[in-house]
Length: 186
Image 1: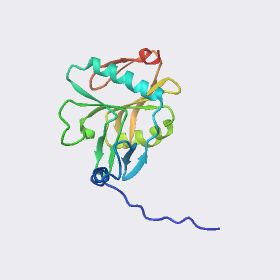
Image 2: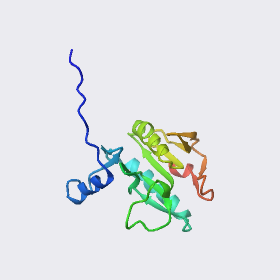
Image 3: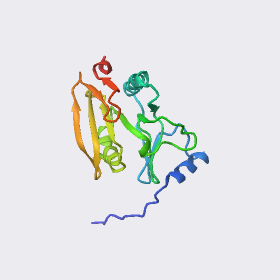
Image 4: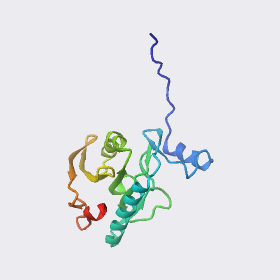
């Protein structure tokens, strides 16, 4: 019987990650994100996934009165070792030319999953909770439902629920923002 060999891993920082891009080692078309110092491949995007992202973005942009900025598949820096690319992020409305938004700028993150539910639930939701992201929605494209997570505490969310297909979701920090889920399923 052979024992498993544990080799040391080289962990990357966000600065290292960005240098890989600047050097051309990672291209803008490479679908990767940095989670806890490790490069993680992102799944290819299906047309179903893209359609839900488009619909959600449109709903959120129509309601925006300058209170927040809608970012579609753009990076959010959680700490020195994690820079994620959620499908949608509602962030504080300010300029981000010099740096990507940080966890403190985020009002809501939305992940759309058609083949990545386990990845989102087991890796990304706890990661977001650890970094104090106040609210996360995960749209399960295959099942046609949305899971909502609120109140991050000690690496998990105190409140989680699955919305009914005809529910209207509101944001805890922006209650005037309303997403009628029935509009997504048409």
